Image (cartoon, rainbow, N blue to C red):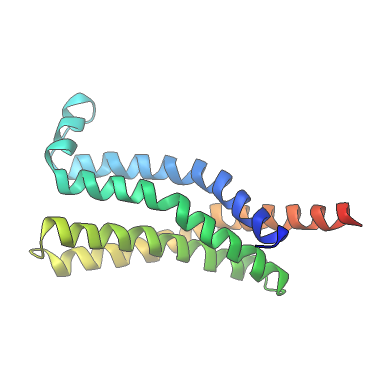
Length: 159
């Protein structure tokens, strides 16, 4: 791994974990609400009583750093190839969302069974599309722009 790929991976990991964990925390509580739980201790009990939901959310939390690292390295490659910040942001955002929500889908199908297969697929596809578009213009754009600045500073420092 060259130095610029390392910069992209670190920027994505540090900044993406901050935004990503906050968002996933909100999504976890929305999941609690949809599972007929209440926020607070009762909601945590409801989440833990639906073990398949809890395991799926735990897998998303564990998958996020790997997705950020992989696509952070890809950010550096794309920027070095001359791709625009917006296009790189779209690749980054859709890639990270695709990985974490596909992990969620497969864990739900394996653990929870195939009873709501079509419904679950539509929800995951909707999440990937909506969150991919939203993060392309917000967090993804910020992370890619910051990566570009750090790479530029690194190149100037070497000169």
